[in-house]
Image (cartoon, rainbow, N blue to C red):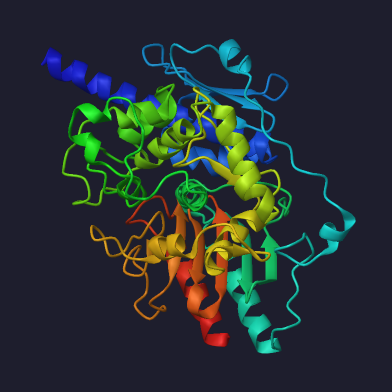
Length: 460
């Protein structure tokens, strides 16, 4: 009996640590990086996601010290979690055994955006920052796009835990930004947390390195320890398709591999890469944020092992050429960008990444990503016909059967959706913090997004 009680207490402690870790990082990111209102973030966006933590939590949010601490007032299970903010780098959770001072002393610096010229400020998206322009659409098409936005922003409940909380809705047709709308209190300048849309961003960064000839999809990542056992058979292709065979338990809302890695491990890639094989590489699809933490860890080694080199490379070789600004992939405590969950970009820049896929890797007359790599991304994996290379495909995510066969989706926790239809040159982005869309089964917001895509396609 005593053993069962101890086991239940240990499980509760793990779950509380998961919840405080999520809350500290999310409050830090949304307030100190994105500039959102602290009270709104705490009460409306985070508390319902970590229920019942909100009944026992103590939140110390200190903008002057640039950090957030979340713990409980329970004397036997305080489980404090700390996230610190660094300008240009975003927020990092401070794991046990790592000091705030040591993290702040890291020499890692975010690359700086070039000054924005008046020409680019006025130029149409995606080359510049000009306003959305729907002049090429018919009145009926405009009405449909606007009506779908109204539906996405509408709420049917006053209960915090039953709200969609749509923040941004953008539509691009034929490579033009034709509609852009934000919820009250938000605007185009604010970066938004993409959660697992970051996986597709990481896939595009890998594609840039493949295009540069730094590695091939069927090469073995140069990782310590993998050459001594069956992990030596894992390739970049396996990681990008989430068929590495590595042991993993993807859990949000409770304790599991993801929570352990994101909020308790100082080196996320090393943790995920250190797990044993559970199956032969290439055979089984297992949704794994761990695979996408290994990818930047391995890319860092391809570039010589220095985290700064990876930050410089992603900025110089992808973000800057696309015209992205304020783009952040938040690092873990080792300095490696967290490639599975922590991309925080302006909605216009998430949309730019989608347009790069629609352009088949071409941008302003330059091949940023080889078209063959984009084909790899958009081709169903042998292990999962609904997943390609770092992107979701038709047949997944409860996608309606009548959407075009080439529909592809960037998808992230809490209702982040960038839906692409290459054959129709359509991109639809919805971002927010939905409490009705937290996993593979609860997807009321997702269905709203797909309904919007269906309606827009019908009008075009």
